[in-house]
Image (cartoon, rainbow, N blue to C red; front, side):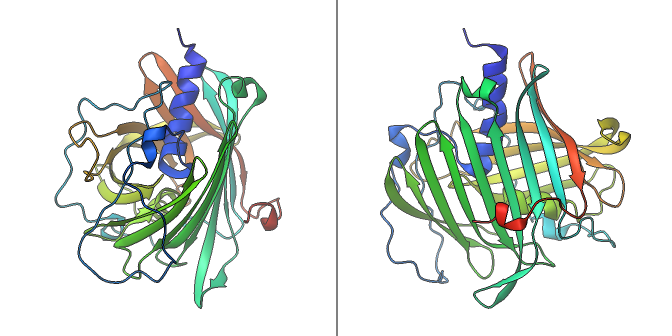
Length: 327
């Protein structure tokens, strides 16, 4: 019988890894993917989706019995009202403590990099990294890092890079978004094989980390609802969110008021995959009820087990060198 800690850690790493850093895979995962051709800029063309089988990790399976009905009017976060004041600055670093049933199992960190020019475009690098502790590693060692390149004002990604390791399974991912954000191409490795696939969407896509910062630019208010197509872990997801109210959240600076937002992720129907039982993830995210809209905590419940990520370090200017985060 699996321990509560093992189950909870699987939830945390599955949510973060499945939607951003890539989840543990089985041999069936490579079905439907193709070997890459020489990369060229994405061209305008008809809809095309190629994908591989959804992960089937015996430690944790996402809810699949009742996936959320996909919205036909999903318009994206850019359709929502933007706040007048930017919510974060270059150099900001956030550090989260990951716990399961109250036991510390690892950490997750983010950083806003300095603007730079990439292929003639001015971009804002956004960094993320995660690691399990030695205690948790006896269950499943994990370490990963993530870098998204987003347009500074719109926070629309133009590309991202991912590196992750589970046990001895090392992988990388290189992703590039089309000029209109509605097309994306991913080159990646699975079990030593280099593969490639494309997705298209009916509205501008984002990735998980860029979406987190974009959400902080939204003018949050009671009852606000959102829908966004998100690319993550070589798949396309529909994210839906609803502001449910406010709560008090414990932080290193004391208890703070926060917006409670219910967030769900559903894998989009994809040719070649089981579209009657699409993976479905739920979580609660707490954004500070102030001008920063800083994510103070996120919570996942799985049966009687609660897995949490709580903000434990917050630096507005950044204490670590950026080259320690960059690829």
